[in-house]
Amino acid sequence: MGIQSEAVIAVVPAAGIGRRMGAQIPKQYLMLNEQSILAHTLDCLLSHPQICQVVVALHPDDNYFHTLPQSQHPQLCQVVGGGERADSVLAALHEVDEGAWVLVHDAARPCLSHDDIDKLLLARQQFPQGVILGSPVRDTMKRSTGRQQICETVSRDHLWHALTPQCFRAGSLKRNITLALSQKIAITDDASAMEWAGTSPGIIEGRADNIKVTHPNDLALASLFLDNLLK
Ligand SMILES: Nc1ccn([C@@H]2O[C@H](COP(=O)(O)OP(=O)(O)OP(=O)(O)O)[C@@H](O)[C@H]2O)c(=O)n1
Ligand SMILES: C[C@](O)(CO)[C@H](O)COP(=O)(O)O
Figure 1 (tube, rainbow, N blue to C red):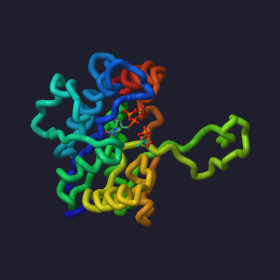
Figure 2 (figure 1 turned 90 degrees about the vertical axis):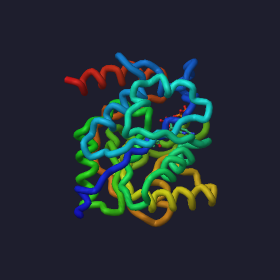
Figure 3 (figure 1 turned 60 degrees about the vertical axis):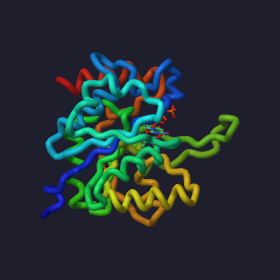
């Protein structure tokens, strides 16, 4: 069975508290246009023809998820997430067959398109070790001192913003996240765990409007992008 015909499972880390957003509720439950950020993200994944299941990792005290219509979807299952994003991804991976392909996608990225999912899944042929979406850096990049004085201009050649989804074989990703966490390695995305284990995942260009809603001023942008996505 060729890679392209293999089932794909989406893993959605949605157990964060949205500290940088500073809202009264976790940011994944903030309304964006006509539904919550998480609902938009789940709609995109649940409606993709190659995704056969979505495993969402929730905060242990999450009291919102059950109010979402998507929470009753037959292809959706939920697990309790952990203290960091990597712990939440790992909790979800324990529910996934080790041989399956997983697409790990942030709940906080509601503007994902089916085109980008298609592109990423096709890229597995070229990158069987795993592959992620990225956005090439457009601006000149500076590194500063702790006192915000520029100390260097960082070359932007082959420099990317890592996006999600990030696509790997479940067993390999589970083992490498487990190892990295056991060594107290800080991993802020899934590819970092694979890199730490010596793998070089592929990175392909995704839409720049696939933003992570992190700060309050991201909401208006995400709303605009969502409207545009639906056109
Ligand atoms: N312990 C955690 C922390 C984060 N996430 C998820 O990982 C994604 C990306 O994380 P981020 O944007 O940092 O979300 P938060 O951790 O909620 O934000 P903050 O760092 O501002 O608190 C989000 O969908 C978030 O819900 C998670 O599942 N489990
Ligand atoms: C996974 C990610 O969205 C890729 O850019 C990012 O690393 C998440 O980081 P955060 O600190 O958990 O928002």
